[in-house]
Image (cartoon, rainbow, N blue to C red; front, side, top):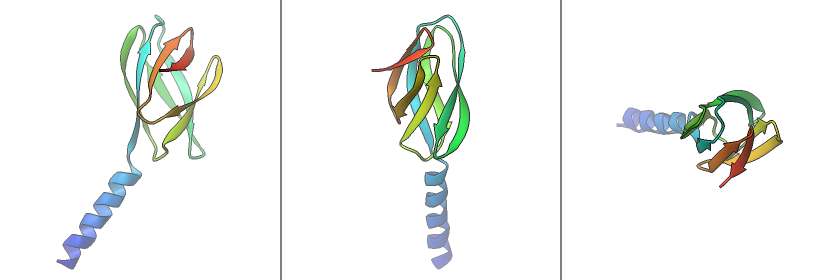
Length: 92
C-alpha cells in the first residue's frame, strides 16, 4: 500500500513538472513564424502556422513566458489568446 501511495505521488509530481504551456493564436499573416521563447531561464522555439488559427504548446512549468517578435519581446501568460500581424503579437 505504501508503494502505491509513493508511486502515485511521484507520478503527480512528474506530470506537474512536465506540464505544457498553451497559447491559442490567430496568425493573420501569410507567413509561418518560428519565434524564440524564454521561460525559467531557458530558451526554446515555437512555430505559428501561416494564415490560420491554432494552439501552440511550450514545455515549461512557468505561468508566463516571453516571446521574441519583430516588434520586441512580449510577455504572454498561459492560456492567453494572441493575434499575430506583421510579425507582432497582440494579446486579446
